[in-house]
Length: 111
Length: 114
Image (spheres, rainbow over the protein chains, first blue to last red):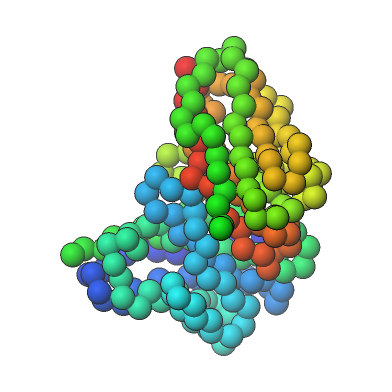
């Protein structure tokens, strides 16, 4: 499975945007880019996913580079509730596409 | 309702005990998963069931025995565990196993082996 690289941690002020980068230089043409997050003492939670085009939903936006070798998860206005570990995961859309977590980015939101 | 329910929330067991973790979903999902998460580490996939049949076993030791008695239930039977098996065990489900499907996680069962 193709690997992703994320910063260990990022800090943001409340109500400011947060841009979480993810590098996936070995991505294949059939890999979806998925983002999940895990709040303290909870199970992981789906955030967003995309293939080639940028995607928006009520939680976040996903900006995918034209060559697909990197992507950025954007939280438009961080709240204290957004403090979590954010995982960028590649899943092959052909076949079973295991959801396998890397180390993730710990997001700290300060009031 | 996008809920995956896991019981018990906490379990302490001895190394000679036999216990089970239970997971239930009523979303009509046909794929169910077990993950293991050690403290400060990401979740690791253990098993995947698709249409009540085991489709993926990530080389998990036989002291962990999964069971999917019907499309809504997933069990993880535990026997002769070691202290290093202490972890958070997460159950999850998705509509289908294929990778375009969102996976929904439960809150997990905290297991301590003494």
